[in-house]
Image (tube, rainbow, N blue to C red; front, side):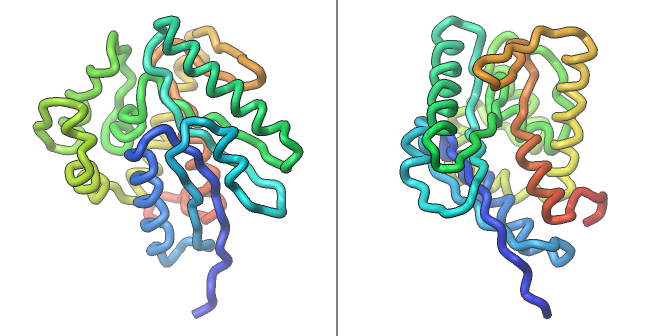
Length: 222
């Protein structure tokens, strides 16, 4: 059997659950015979994109996706979010041939996980409201988001995710952003990084779709 070319993808992430998700996705792609590539995800739990870039050793031009949450429209959460964007911009201008991509979720990464199984196009008042659709999507009865994020629980949930689910999440993520655009929600452009203050909204699907396309895995049934 011909050995597949390996391609690296770089991620800095805000939490351990995002890193575990990427490990699951890497496993699924590398165990899919129809994938034209094998992949290696270089991911690290690092809230500071500048620190992550300084730890990366590379020769060629690379893209890095920073996965982060816009947890609410409260001033402190907006400030924290924009501080991360400031650091991404600085990291991109270090002269290391770095391009930082924004992979945000509004409110949280849980939205992206829900979209693997069911639609979630509803506006919520608070990020804790994701618990109910999470439980429905994965057939669980967790009593809190913290319980959901416990390693043994989270990894058991990840074992329910397959490549078809990833394709569905990408499709639903696109639909959410198309809906926001069609309804003239105000897109914020902060130093070249674009996002919606309204929830639900997200761009994490863009980087995941690129990986899936590189591997020729966007067709249904692959």
